[in-house]
Image (tube, rainbow, N blue to C red; front, top):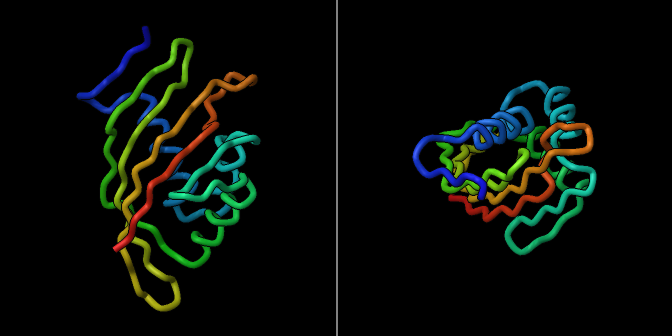
Length: 138
């Protein structure tokens, strides 16, 4: 049976944290697009709250949010991880992010609990094949 970890952050969680950092939080749009293309599967399944969205809609959401807001991660924690034999696995994590509008300066805090399914692709690289996000904001 594959490992399940509860104490220390797993390598899979650390990989996922870096992927989302590169897609959402760092300031270089080219790095964000390249990371999205590299790590989000072409046939990814994405669900945000009640809505199932396409990869293209998810990409549009990511790029439009990056264009209008600066995001600062306040916290991120691994809730649960299952590591698949041979690589990949599933990660449940929670993040708290401040979104600051670039033009108005207004900000709000978003909290997301995410379940991510990560698989080893045909090229041997890890990719996100499914993500379900429960998102709230205050």
